[in-house]
Length: 335
Image (cartoon, rainbow, N blue to C red; front, top):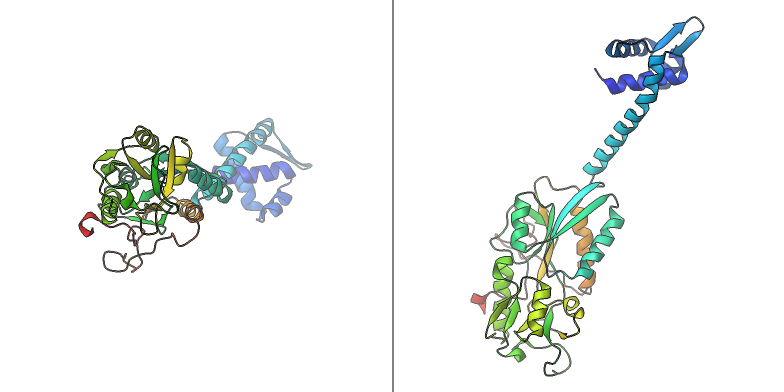
């Protein structure tokens, strides 16, 4: 029995107290409406209307049903609306991963901009390494992730936006010897130890970064690992080495200084990706909004990295995938 349909028909009769007018309001003939009311009475085991020559009036059971059915139909309509909005990506929860190195200011701008685009979607960010994000995306525990590239091994079943790189610089102790104006050449760091994220967090980016440093004349005497920007900053302050980071990381700590790198220095490209199969309806909108924020943070000066053509660099439609990008960094074997 289609209870909700019968209830809607019942309410029309109860509000009009006239089967003919109710049928007109429902754009249907009167006989099927009468049959619907009788079927509802049989289902509930109670007479809902008293029908006399002088008209129609509700029984006590009918009065009760009229009072109770309104909330049920309203909740049903609300449920339909929410389900439709969730299907269109306008409602629900979106689980995303972000790397620890992402500046908090940038994350805040992403979330604020997306809240304007989709105010009904609740974004739940989780601080995760690239390797953890790839695993959780495959297990459908994340709806989207901001990956650091290159990603190795190459992930399967993901699509996303072009990669973007925020300006990268060197974090030094505040009492470091002053250097000349302009970008800091990596070769000037000599044998200074390098503080960097653990390799297992993003193996491809880790190897590419070390290769680029060596290629530009910086041969760190030691590699020191830090799992978060806070630990990295603490190690720099303690004199354990210097680090590569975004400017916003160093800005929070007065005991360190940040120096920009030249155009040929290593970059840390990132891009939002999502599962290609049955993605969250709002994931693509979030990725596009967040990528616009990243490009603005990069200064809008060509920091969006383009795809590399070729069999490995193209999907089934020939288009470059987000992780097949042209990097300023080089792998160790290329250095």
